[in-house]
Length: 134
Image 1 (spheres, rainbow, N blue to C red):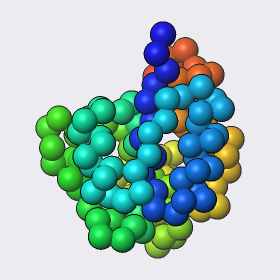
Image 2: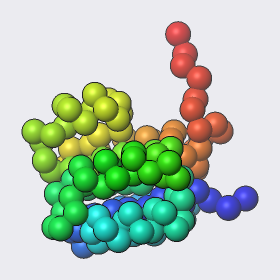
Image 3: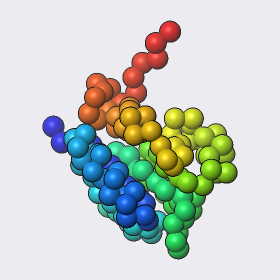
């Protein structure tokens, strides 16, 4: 079975590289974009199982990328997990994307990988949306 594709959209080369390394080691197929526009182009062409999105990027920032994704019927259903250093945007994004889909930098690697597995149904999970336990 083909591993889920995760698209990392992050302008900081060290963070982008870290995320690529972590996800690849977990067994995901990973592609990356260094800016928002390239991320949108790759998302449209590849239809990833998940987009890991930074907010603060030159040219086309993460909030604009999120708006563009949500307004395009072909990409609106792609799940997005935000990883950001923009702390003041976190509460509002959690209202839109959900509490567990927004991570502040620095983030707990284990929590991020757990969320990626939940969303994609990838390594370490059996279903994309595990049942809630009482």
